[in-house]
Amino acid sequence: MYRYTEFDQNFLRARNAQFRAQVARRLSGELTEDEFKPLRLMNGLYLQLHAYMLRVAIPYGTLNSAQMRALARVARQWDKSYGHFTTRQNIQFNWPKLEDVPDILDALAEVGLHAIQTSGNTVRNVTADHFAGAAADEIADPRPVAELIRQWSTDHPEFQFLPRKFKIAVTGSPNDRAVTAAHDIGLRIVAREGEIGYQVLVGGGLGRTPMIGKVLAEFMPEADLLPYIEAIVAVYNLIGRRDNKYKARIKITLHETGLDEIKRLVEEEFIPRRAAFKGVDQRLLAEIRGHFAPPEFIKDDNSAPPPSPALRTFIDSNVAAHRHADYAIVTVSMKSHGATPGDATAAQMEVLADLAETYGHDELRISHEQNVILPHIPRAALPDLYQRLKAVGLATVNIGKISDIIACPGMDYCALATARSIPIAQEIATHFRDIGLEEEIGALKIKISGCINACGHHHVGHIGILGLDRAGVENYQITLGGDHTEAATIGERAGPGFSADALIPALERLLRAYLTLRDRVDEPFITTYRRVGLDPFKAALYPQEGAQDVAA
Image 1 (spheres, rainbow, N blue to C red):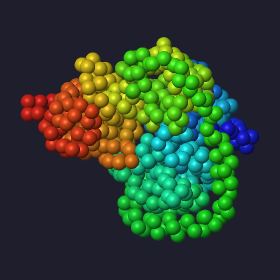
Image 2 (tube, rainbow, N blue to C red; image 1 turned 135 degrees about the horizontal axis):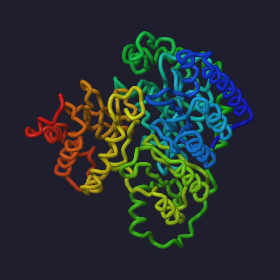
Image 3 (spheres, rainbow, N blue to C red; image 1 turned 45 degrees about the vertical axis):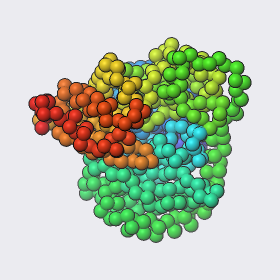
Image 4 (spheres, rainbow, N blue to C red; image 1 turned 135 degrees about the vertical axis):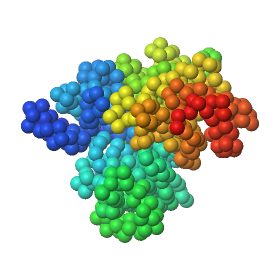
C-alpha cells in the first residue's frame, strides 16, 4: 500500500497547523460559527444534530494495522470508544470536542491519515473495490489509479469550489463491487487486445434525483485517463449549475446538456490538458504502482484438518475466492444482529489490527457495505482466525443476507435526516433471525436511508427503505428491484409508505411472498423480482385487510 513521503508528511503537518490556528480563533470567539464553517468543512469537520462529527478518509478503503490502531486510539481517547464506517469507505467519529480535533488530526497524520476533502464542494475520497488486489476475478488492481487520482485531486487549485461535491469510484473487476454507476465518475478497468484501459461512466448519483451513470468513453487508454478525468471535472466546473444546489451535481448537468454535447466539450477540453501533462502522471503512476506489489504469498501444505461444521458455515458465508489458490478473502461482518450497521468499537478495531498483522500481511479494507475485509488470509490460517473472531463477537455469519444491511446514521445523529435508520435496521435483523427466516431467504441486499439524500444507497437495494417525515410522523417508503452491481438499476417505488410499527410486518409479508414465488430454493430475491415483476410483491405489501396500516 502507499506510504507517505516526506513531502506528504510536511504537507499534513502544515495543513493541520493551519487548522489548529483556525480552531483557536473559533474557540476564542474571533471567528463566528458561520465564518468557521467553510474552514472546518475543508477539514472534514461537520456540526451534526448533537455534536461535531469528524469524517476521516480511508483512501480506496485500504488500511494497515497501524492505521486501524490509530483509529481505535481516536475512538477511545477523544470520542465514545467507537467509530462508524460509511458507504464512502470513510470512518466518522460522532462525539469529538472541538478543542480536541487538532490533536486528533495530528495523531492521524502520524500514520498517514487525514480528513481533507471528506466534505465540501470538491473531489471527495476516491473509493474502490474492497477486494482490490486480492480478488480472483480481477483484471487489474484499481488502487494505484485510485491513489493517482487522490494525489491529483488533493488541494487541486482549480477544483476546490466546484458547483457541488464530486465522487469517483474505481473497480478492477467485471463484477462491480464499487457501485461505479452511482458516482459522478465511475471507472471500470477493461482489457482490449491485451491492453489495459478504462470504461468511463459519468453522471451517476443517488439522492433526490437518482440516476445511473452513462458511458462517456468505452475504452480510455491508461496514459490518457487522468487528463481525461481532469477534462470532465473542468467542463463540469465551468457549466455546472450554481443557482440551485439540488440541481448542481454533474448528473443534472449531463441530463440538461445531453450526453453528446458533454462528450464534445470534454474531448475539446481534453486535447490541451493531455498536452500539458507531458507524461508526468504516468511517471508518478509507475512509482505508485511499486507500492502496491502483492505480498509474498506462501504455499499451503494442505495439512490442515477438514473444517468443522461451524467453520464451514462461516467460510460459505464470509469467505470469497482469492487470486492465489492457497489464500482467501475474509469479510468480517460489522452487522451482528441488533448492532448498529458499520459501528466498530475501539476494542474491535484493535483486534482487527492484530488479526491483519498476525495472519493477513498487514492489510485491511473497509467496504462500501460497512464491513471490514481481511484480503489476504492463508487458507491454512482460517481455523485459527475464525476462533479469534468468534472469541470477540466478530464471527457473525450473515454476509449478503437480510441482516447485512447498509444504513445511514439517520435521525439519531444527522441534522439532515427526517427519520431513524439505525433502529429500523436493528429491528429487521433481529426479527428475521428470531422467526428463523434469514437463512431461508438467502441472498438479499437491504439498504436504508433516513432522508432523500440517500446516504444509505436505498435506491440500489434489492429492497430499499427511505425514511421520511409525514406531518411529524416517520414514514417509510419501500423500493424494490434496485441493483448496485455492473447491472446497476434504480429500484421501483412499491406504493405508499408505512409507519414504523407497520414496516416490519409489511417486510415479512413481502418476503414470505418471495418464498412462494421463487422457482427454486436457491433463486435469489432479485432474480425472482426480475422474473415476476412488481405486481405480486405489491399485492403482498398492500393486502386489502391491512390497508389501515398504510400511511398516506
